[in-house]
Image (tube, rainbow, N blue to C red):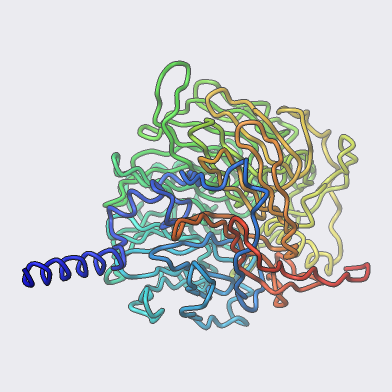
Length: 635
């Protein structure tokens, strides 16, 4: 009898130890990320980047009880908190500006470890185009993968934060930086580069998760025309460029979204703008300039090209196509379709077949004037002639280079069938080609000047609402300021502003619930914008939104009824929200606060706010951060 009791005790103990053992973050865990909602293992919650959580403990009936559970001081900042934290085995992992990584207890916020890559700030900051930012991490097989802004990809031990290996993706001396969250796919860490405002050649590459060795690399634009094309894909691209254009860089960097379809083994990413911005400086009128401003699909295992869809051929307006790429199965006109969706910077919402890349539908989700619409068969834009600009003729168009939707994450709720897009509508920007442009190696090469102001349509005129925030506009202003120190060139007169298309509704920063099957808004509310904060949606019929002014708002997902508003008192540099469950409690986490270090060309803040991580729970009683002291007027 005693032997039976001993066996029983040992069995119970073994079961307890097994239950407490850390769960392995391997291929199966990443494929299933987000299915239970308890953990958040990959950027976007799952490979399809839906940011939809099946958790529903917090719902419309009890959301009013949401309160702060704990906070964590992120430390000295300098830019927007753009990363979405990851949660695994009760630990939260995230990254802040200058690529500093930290791990905290997801129950209490107590720090477990912290790692600083010790980037050379003075040397690297001048190479950063659009803000000292990092958008997230990757987890896999006991490692945390860190994109360091100076071009290094580093694997850290998940328990200690100590480096395991380091690989060089690119060099800041060549004007590249890393700002995006990596995507781990079947033992490969996939990441792209930033820097299209400098003379760079965009690419995306994959690295072995165990060793850091490069597995494959895919360039997004051609290189040196005096040399043979690397492959047929680049040969095809060369036919769409002027032979001297890529001497000015080319652009096409990959700096935000990567999604993955395990069944098709296809990895998807968007590419950035062409460089310099004006098409006439690249001799690009009538040339598509592949593969800038495109969505591209590759075989994840080999990097083999499968298809592309170009949103803005021969781009002249900085309309990067890098925004979130959501994968979903939706019913369109009675047929179930496997789709990839993007609310693009150019103001159109695109739905494509994710297996073939074939255009299904597209429509403006905000006011748009640069194009009259999209070709119904191909999705190619029908560009307004008055949207083109040159050295002698300026153009005022919308949206501007900050875009209708930029890096602020959107989310898709399969229960409502709606995509929740933080957007900016009704803003214009004034473009003209710099008549004195000369290529400056290692420096910003936008190639534009601001054209004469245009009163517009009562929306505040050129650059309305865009100049205050966002890296691209701030970068353009920095270059314009530099040019102003020289004798001013004649400013080009503007053409008449093209007419707009798109839905009526609130202007400025908005949150719109978009029906991708019908290509129509179901509800729209004021607040938010293309940059700053973002959304997550849940099975509790909730849309949780963070706004760049520090507000946490919650809406009903189906009707857009505002259920809760909390001023976090961070008031600036806000990151996107996420949610997870531990010990039977659902939590909601966000980060915000810029700190005192400034954010490169993205601008600093007159009232530095210590960056913090805030985590909320039902009936949380912890005090919110104190409101910042009021500052005097001025800049």
